Each structure stands twice: as structure tokens, then as C-alpha cells.
Amino acid sequence: MKSQSARGACLAILLASLASTAWCQDAGLPNLLPLPPLAAPDGASVVSRAATTDALWGQADPSPAPQVGDIDVPLPSIMGPDYTDAMKGGYDGSYTSAAPSGGPHNHYIYANALIMTHVKQGGFVTAVDSATGNAALAFNQAGFNNIWNGGLEIGTGWCFGCNCNRAIELVYWGLWPATTTATARGSLNSTLDFSGLDYNGAAAAPLFQNALVQQIQYGFTFNSVEANLVGNSSCGGPFGCGMCGCCNGRGGSPWGFGWVGGFRYINFSEQFLYRSDTTDGFFNGDPTEINYRMSLNNNLYGFQFGGGLSYCVTNRLTAYTIAKFGIYDNHVTQFQTVYGTQGTAMINTGAAAGQDFVVRSTDNVFATAGQFDLGGRWAINNSWSVNFGYRVLGLSGVAISEVNAVRSNFQNTAAIASQQTTGSFILHGGYIGATYCW
Image (cartoon, rainbow, N blue to C red; front, side, top):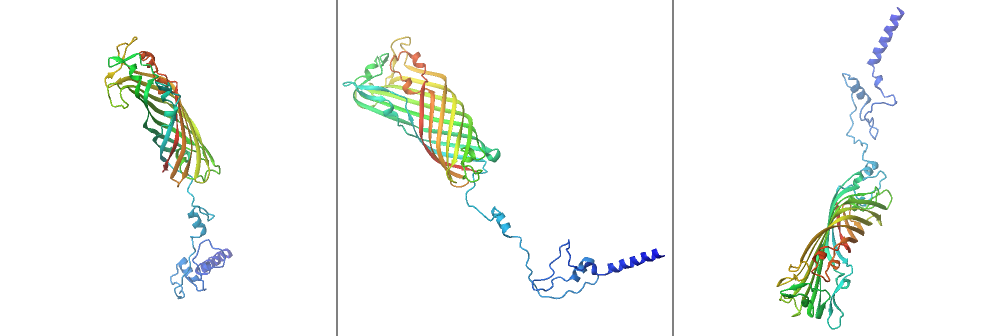
């Protein structure tokens, strides 16, 4: 009986407590469920505790809420200083307007204008004054060592790898054809011996002696095509997409380095023309004019490798140096002839007697090439930069005019056909242009 009475009493107390609103009153203790603000700034109640209780427990008759005027309740701001700083790029509130450090970019293209000349290897005197024996016309450094040619360089590449620090690139650069002429007048005797040839039914040699005018014309062309794989270090370098952007953000080091390797094709050709006229002082196509012409063409196919260094002088100015070296198979072609308006000179002695003096020959020889660039870049912004620098390129194992010009024994065509490919050729000059990365 006592047990049943106790259970009945507990049940009654529980039902009474559920019917009371005291369970929903704020006791000033922490609450896991967020509630609306209970009072306005001036102390006026916004939502009554009874209304809160009604909403929670679903009483049939909601407690009356006091009528108050419209109150502007300030909402907590979520656009604080930290949020604004984060949107600007730094939680410390700092912001820099300096251009980014060059990336990430995936492609680049650049173009440079070139102005270059070459260094001749030796030379020879072609004519002397018949009275004094002094040199009157020479194919040498003094007259043909400063032939400045304009040209163009253009390159493009696709960047990949970590931070896009590697690239596959294609590069072309070349010089426009240019010709330099040296002329001498007076009473001139050639130093070249043409006694093995006849021209227009008579000996050709007298047409080069006691001439009133003689002339040398010389020109060369140069073209280069490269397909390279290039790479830069993690702190930057002179290649690929590293050519754009400023120097900040490179791990604190102003130095960068890179490497290059790939296939290269070089075409280098020379044209040589020696003319003489014994009847007047002008070349106008008369029958007594005679010409000795030579063309040499070098086609180099091979592989190159190299490296480069870059240094951040300022945030926008980067200095760099690049060196490349290659080994090549040089396919050489040669053409030589003596001719005039009356036809081609004829060999008058030896095994080839009666044949026209026209020599064509080809050969394949080993050649090398080296290129050195020293320059700088100025970053306009993250995508554009200005390039400027100086370049030196050298070739060895090539056929050049001063080595292959025939001095005598024009009848020995077999010896003439064996090209002399022991020559060297050096180009040097400046360039300026721009690079764009995207």
C-alpha cells in the first residue's frame, strides 16, 4: 500500500510540474539553444518570456505581449576588420601594389629586334697598283669587317611543371641579307692567277691585268631555329615563364638559375664576287668585263645544351646571362664559276681541259657552335617585360670565302671541289624587344 501510495504521489507531482510554466523560465543559467535578444538598448522588452514559453510549449492561449513602438535593433556585424583584411589578401591589414613575381603563367611569346656584325677570319689582297705594287683592293678585315645587319628574333613556349618552371619552346632568329662593296680604280693587276682559263676564245688572265676598275662584293646570311626544353630553379631563372613578372616572392634569394637543351638548325651562307674591266671605269656589261663568283652554304644540324643565371638588381630589373654550346653535322654546298656576258670561262689545260669552269660540290663535316647572351629585363607588370642585351655567336668547322677562294690552278677542279671547312665565323651585336606571358 505504501509503495502504491508513493508511486501515485510521484505521478501527481510530475503531472503538476508539466502543467507549470516554470520549466521554461530563464534562470540566468547558460542555454544551449540561442534565443533572440530579450531587451532593446533602452531596456524595452522585445519578446516576452511568456511568449517564448508559449512558442515552445504550444499553449492554447498565448500570453499577451506588451505593445511597444518600433525599435531598431542593431544586428551584429560580420564585415569586421579581419574580414576586410582577408579580402585584401592579408590578415595583418597590409596591402602591396607591387606586381606579382611572374606567375603562374602557362604560355609566353617574345620578339626582339637585332643589329649585328661579324668578325672576318684573315683575308687576302686581290689587286695591286701596277705601277707601285702597293695593295689597291683587298678582301680583308679593314674593308669587310663591319657589315652591320638588322634582324629579328621571335620565340614562344608552353610552361608546365611545379610553378610552371619548365617549358617547351621554339625560337627563330636571323639577319637580313646584306652586301658590302669595295671598288678600286686606276691601273690594277690581280693577285689571282687565272692562267688556267680561257674566256671568249682568248686567255682569261689578261682581263684581270691592267684593269681600269676592279670590285669585290661580299654578303652573308644567317638563320637559326631551335626546339628546346628549358627549366628554372625554384627561386627563378632566365628561361621560360620566368621572363615575366617582378622579383618579389622568390624565397628571399635574388639569384636564379636555369638550364636548356634541345635541337638546333643553323644556316649560314656567303656570297663572293670579284669583277674586273679593262676598257672603262664602269661595270655596264661590256664584253671585256669578267667575273669570278663563289657561293658557300653551310647547313648545321645538331643538339645543344647550356645554362643561365639571373639576378634581381631591383624588384623590377633582372640581369641575366645565358650560354649555349652545340655539336653539329654540317652539310656544305659550294658553287664556283668564272663568267661574263660572253659566256662561261673554259678550262684550257689538265684533265678537265675543254670543260666549263663550273664547280659544284657537297660534303658533310663536324662543326660546333657557341652562343653567349648578357642582358636584362624590366618588368612592366606581371605579364609584360622589356628585353635588352648583347649577343655573341661563334661557328667553327664551316666553309667561308677567304678560305675557299681560289688563288691559282683554276684547272684543278678536283682540289677546288674539296671544300675547306676549317673556317670560323663570329657574329656579335645587340637586341631589344618585349616578352608577354599569359
